[in-house]
Length: 308
Image 1 (tube, rainbow, N blue to C red):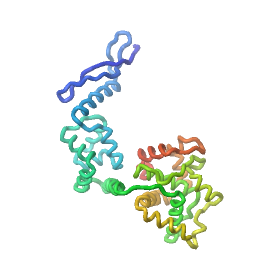
Image 2: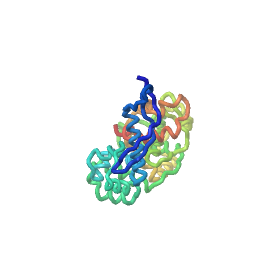
Image 3: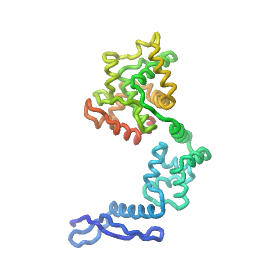
């Protein structure tokens, strides 16, 4: 049977109201008989649902998804917080229309930051500890802002941190040039995820062994360890950079997070990790890994990057 797609106008009745939709449908090319196609039919139904949403001011699936995304929680987490059944949010995100009561409740929480903050404070015990922490971190971050910082100051922060950790734990190894390259790459990703802006403005290049910042390479070219010069005595300028960042509440949250999640990993482990991730994989060797790639990847895959 030869099949053909063409536009077809049909009427859908949603909650007692008729909505006319013109959308692609499948036909028998010889008989012009309308054929069932699940994907095309679902798209037409969703177009009708969108007309209903527009007509009645109902929330759209993407609004719920974006709300969850910025909080870094699952649909089940959001349902638990609000008091919905576990699958309710997932159903709404997949196109199901909420009840009028649920729609009003969701719109109020999503569109009014203060209302959501108050609701969270009163209902956070409905959530697991990890989910509560994610939402609290969101509120902590929106009270802060992030400004561009010299990447070499960020490097100095990690250098001093490494020396301080070595003094309390003899098993901590020297920070290497290869490892710091990966750590600052992850700093940039976390900055984009949390603040939607970069921590530093230097380009990140896709080199053979993973992401590299040229300025760091130029400074430490030929070195393995990058902390030998500060082991006995930390120079004043390096210490000032460390203290400056510690006084930058936004940036130090990012750096401490990266240090906590990845600081114990070896340089090779981090290189292999970056090799498995899309920003490096989809960038030709020695080319710039675009900020757009970094931002999208970290916003879409944050949990799998840092918590799997």
